[in-house]
Every structure is written in structure tokens, then in C-alpha cells.
Image 1 (cartoon, rainbow, N blue to C red):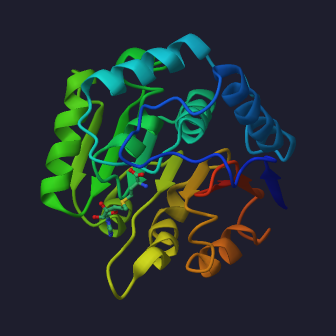
Image 2: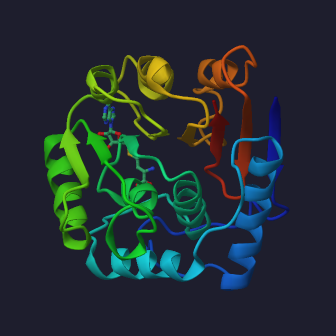
Length: 247
Ligand SMILES: C[S@@+](CC[C@H](N)C(=O)[O-])C[C@H]1O[C@@H](n2cnc3c(N)ncnc32)[C@H](O)[C@@H]1O
């Protein structure tokens, strides 16, 4: 089943990439839009419910704002909240995020299981970044809010990480922009490597479902095929978008 959630203002809700912490709208509005998206994810059976701890979410946001070095990011406050909420709701034992740059996207997912926003005990929250110097900065950022090491960033090709991961993967976040040959098409390669390890109830989140829609055509064809997945929803509340798929 394929659905779309689109907010009225998706095209005018914009961030400045160099100002990741600037508030773009009243908090109530942000919560309302994210709740609407979560409700669609629940309706199609991707999420079991839509409840998550709003105070913990803000504790997570504050810790990242105070401690992370973020040169730029395309993760809007709405997207940060949605990623946190999905992880807080499904509580993945193992989560892999591919293409994490400075770590902001990674911690938006991992923040539900590590640091001051944690609401459950995770086993492995792994961010993967192919550029060693970026992976190093991301790891440094993550260490400032998670002393346990449950959340960590490694320098690797995410295609190899999912293939070699020895356990089940309950959540997979895709944001790698590949290289010249592979580009955003790499999402499909990573997902296919993880597919057999993803149990029923697991969730895949793919960033840039709007502004990279053309380059993600093969990927979206695969995740929207009912032979492969229970349901997939294109969440459009900013100009980047997130395709959320449930197995
Ligand atoms: C453009 S960034 C994503 C930024 C993110 N949307 C944000 O707003 O913070 C994509 C990252 O994917 C990394 N990347 C590309 N191919 C990869 C691969 N095969 N495995 C892991 N990381 C990869 C790039 O080095 C880059 O840092």
C-alpha cells in the first residue's frame, strides 16, 4: 500500500542549512504537523501507535544544539522530531543510519535510545559515513551526549556495514549520496543488503524523497511494491521529504 502525507505548507516551510537550530514555527504547529504524519503511518500499519515523550524529545534537541558541531544540515525541526518519534515508538534494538555526514541525522534517530532523550535501552545504534574525517567529527559529536558507546559512528561503506551486520536490523535510515557512479541509487543497494535481516515490524526511512525523487525512482518502486513491504508513505512536510516504509 502506498500513501502520501502532504502538509499544506510543505513548500514554504524552509530552513537555512547553516542555521540548524533556528525555530521556524511555533512548537504547537510543529507537533501538529508531525502528529498528522505519525497518524498516517499508524493507519497503514507501519507504526503500532503515535505516542512519544515530548519532554524527552526537547531534552534531545537541547543536547544536540548545545554540543554538536554542525557545519550545515538539511534536517528541519519537523524532520528531527519525526525521526526521533519513529525511533521512540518502534524502539529498535539495532538501528543503522547510512550517510550521516556530521552526525545530526544519525542522532535524530539514535537520540531515542541514547543521550538525554533516551526512552529505551538499545543494543547497537550505528551511524555509517564513508568519509573518514566526517565520520570522525560525527563520532566526536555523538560522544558528547552518549558516554555509553551504544550510539557510535563508523567510517565505512554502508553497503558493507549492512551486509556484514551479524544480527537483525529493526530500523534503517538512508541518507547516503553515493559516489559518481551510484548516486542516491545507493539507497536500493543498501536496503537490498539489509532486507533479509529486517524482521516484521521493522521500518526504513529514506531522506530526500521529494528533492531527489527522480534519482530515487528505482528505490521507491521497490519499497512501494506490496510484494516487498507492508506499506510505504511519502511524508512531505518540507522540501526534502521522507519515505517511510514498514516491513
Ligand atoms: C549529503 S550527506 C547527508 C546530509 C544530511 N541530509 C543532513 O542534512 O545532515 C550524505 C553523506 O553520505 C556519505 N556517503 C556517500 N556514500 C556513502 C556510502 N556508500 N556509505 C556511507 N556514507 C556514504 C557522504 O560522504 C555524505 O557525507
